[in-house]
Amino acid sequence: MNELQLIQFGYAGLFVVSFLAATLVPLGSEAAVVAMAASGFDPAMVFIIATTGNSLGALVNYYAGRWGRNFILKKYADNESQPLERAEKAFARWGAPALFFAWAPIVGDPLTVVAGILRVNILAFTFWVVLGKGARYFLILAGVNFGLGQIAG
Image (cartoon, rainbow, N blue to C red; front, side, top):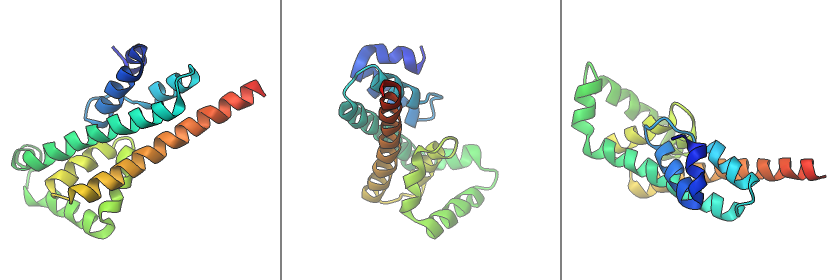
């Protein structure tokens, strides 16, 4: 079952797609958001549900990193300190605002896991992740609205 099939379940399907898309499951929520908005679903509800589901999925990654820190470092790092040192340097340079880009393909999901490994403050994590994911969905929905206006106009 793919993301467009899941939206047949309406807002609940959108929540599931958005949630799973923020984890390491290979799904994207953008197509579902566009399809629902273009199909007449309430854009405000699509925004709220997609942002909430995607942000909660990122929290799963955060806690996977936080609680699974030792396992992750032993399993995926040849030298336990080297990847952690690189991640610490990146967060030291950019800080929690780097989490604004948790929505970005390829790097976003691992970024949220690393934030958990580094034990980034949960309030700062939540603020920046929700802000970034919300901004992305706002722009997607604005694009859909603009596109539909162009077609109708």
